[in-house]
Image (tube, rainbow, N blue to C red; front, side, top):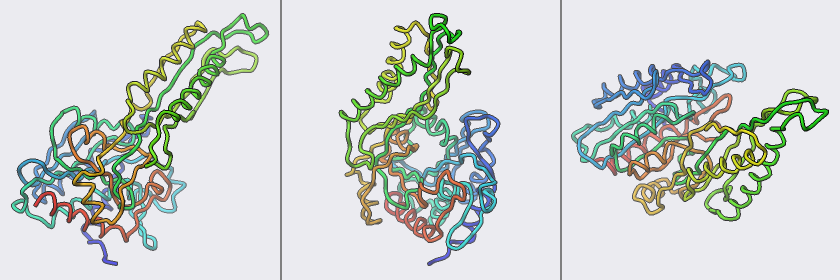
Length: 381
């Protein structure tokens, strides 16, 4: 096995040692600016034209381009990580640690290492070799709002014709994934003494009726939509969290449900959210209650790149693997929205992501760098 270069491991080590947790809880959320500044310094030294883009206070994207022209190649990775419980780790999550044939650290596979590998691959080339530009993009808050990728898409600029997003897929091309909606539904009725139901209006009973309708709707979706390319071939609705009331002798005045809906390519995210909300509104109206909604996740569209796209066919050829469809979400649909042929593919496994002792297999490092070099030759030179 060829050893990864010391320069590459040094970059990964510095990225791991620079915390950049993205979290919906403000007390855990961090700025990603220190990571962006590290990357900006390395990319400028390598000859890239670097732009630092403000997303939200303390949150930044980085767009770095080498070479001139249009219809270029993008390597994209997010700079944030999920939170972690250090007590559950065998070594510090913020120190790159080698044990056996693995490198451990928070972000080692999801997905700081990929950005360092993209920089390493680019250093084998000179700008004058390029007939199409190479752009390396590092985004903010993928683990929460995907606000970094959303901003790129909202700006509407064509950043390249082809895009690789280096999420951990064990170097298997992924051309489709499900979309995601996460929603809070909150019923407000009237509390009262449980000895007399007429003294209140139970929000828990309203929620019970709503859940029954939601499960019927789930069955209808699963009858109507199916895609055998996915391991779970139908849309899913998960009832993930519920809370209501405070005592058995009080009529429940408020009840809240959190749901996760994962839908297939071709399904409309706005129509799905409207249906979920309209069913709850109808229940509230009949029961003379109030209902409110919070988008726990703004929503990630489903991703689909045509199997006959140049990028997909090329990657299937050089990896000798058929492209896959997966259930987890990525920033890919936002790149598709910008007109990019987009494939998700990177080292490491999604099974290690978001887990204590997250790791990157050492034997995937050099193959990843070589694969990225081949992509640059094919689509830039």
